[in-house]
Image (cartoon, rainbow, N blue to C red):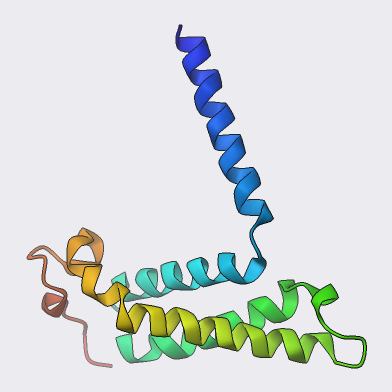
Length: 126
């Protein structure tokens, strides 16, 4: 019975990975940038004011290198167009966080601190 259960879980995991691989790169990049912002927020030595800039830059560079070059017209420079699209994905990730996701930070223990209040996180002054 446990072999069938393990096989079933493995099948579900494989299906999930296949579905993720079929998503557009920009959607995957959006999720990665939001997670990166959360990781940077947890680092005590990294100032919060620099997180949006890092998100914009990482989005620009990542999409410039890994974006779909076939989606760019023949009369355009693929790296420039993809980098601009990556900047827009970074801006979308930051806007999504600033408008919607920030309200849910108090429910994520690593982001909220021990009290559940995101204002209680203290970072050293740089």
